[in-house]
Length: 389
Image (tube, rainbow, N blue to C red; front, top):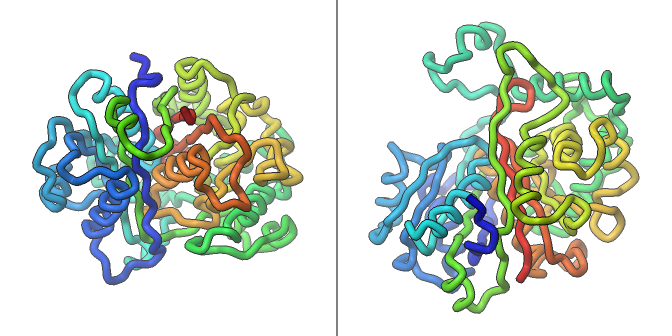
């Protein structure tokens, strides 16, 4: 089912806090929802669809719906795909709207790992019933190690260097300096990245994302409602979602699920990578960006290191401006799930509401892509293409 042009993102809000010791997770969700509604010019009573994932506290979607007193719900969805859940939710909301199940869908994310002292480096324990637990947990896998395996293999296969990976962080830092809410606002150099402490060879500390509290929310609405509001029109034109695992031992560490979700989204949208003016790319680690750019078709497999080098991702300088809010590497990574913030900055770019220093000129088409899980063993993947109408 194509959702091209059948739904619009009408509200977007990013929580300003990066450390929220005096907030509950529920409160953060509610404040994000309130901010998105105010941005759209809607009220709580307009919401008839609600979407949340595993970061939402309580038993299920009804817990947050009850907390926020959402009375008119006709459609709910608690699909959890980790960090890319919220891109999946946008696609599912568009499908629900197209099917007549709802007209105004709220999607929220929030968490406080920074206040709770979670490093975000551990593989989360999903319980003894996790299918892979008996085979993996005895070896105590760590998230950064799983990504380091991908980086090392990419270097082995294609000659990618630590200096090339460092350019991803450099670009993010150039953008973060203009974001007053970003956790890391200092511009860094390639030398500073590669000379930062080694965390898991070949990934250095500055190759890794931040851990933050906070959250965000978006509102997806029908075309009729979107066109009645006094906000720039951001149309959903292409979506793709999938998973990638170990395929019964047929393991290949150098590509991600974007290899499938990207082409599907581009086909639905009727465009190609060269048409994209701005890209929000999930940046849990620098290698994550390099692999996804290849898999989405912005460059050939193996050329990602060269593609990101020499400032090619810096707005106003490079060929493909990315993560102009500073991304997960410098701005925030709320609940250790970065997909929502990728949507938010893409919407700001399409509306012309990004910081003037990083606003992409004539930004009429943007891509957001996310992963959930780990590139090193199994993950979800989702791609979203949006256009300014």
